Image (cartoon, rainbow, N blue to C red; front, side):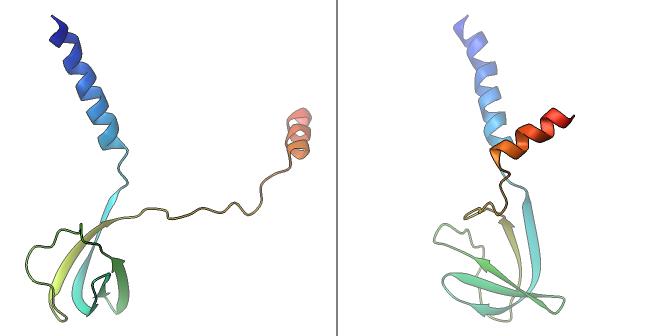
Length: 97
């Protein structure tokens, strides 16, 4: 009986964790430069530098000149607010409405 209520909870948490992932993107083209930290791919004359780590899954052998498809997600490393409204100005705008 307890399992009857536990299973929907497990699915709800799993769905929430899956939904929290940022969108996945891809870039395809020849490798023009390669280091332990960066793969540089030429996509239509534009060079894309994509960071990689020891956790990056690689299928095959990476080499300059090889055509690859790199899958990546964008993640913020920092955020800086440039123009935060003053507390008094925010209250005045609400009062006008």
